Image (cartoon, rainbow, N blue to C red):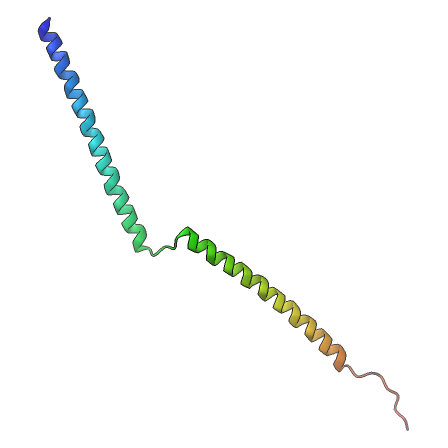
Length: 93
């Protein structure tokens, strides 16, 4: 009976050691994968989300300003056309 207990104790110790070893391997793999992914992302020259949002707002503002300029230009053209039209005057003979 003492041999069975010793064997079970040894087996449980081996199992615990194996679990801690696998845990260490898992952590090591996660670290290596994270480093490789970050390296690949950095090679792509991607912008950060914050920079993207700032540029997006700038583009939206410029787009709105451009639309305003277009409408102002159209109204100026219309007003110039109406001013340039000659009025129908009767010719005196």
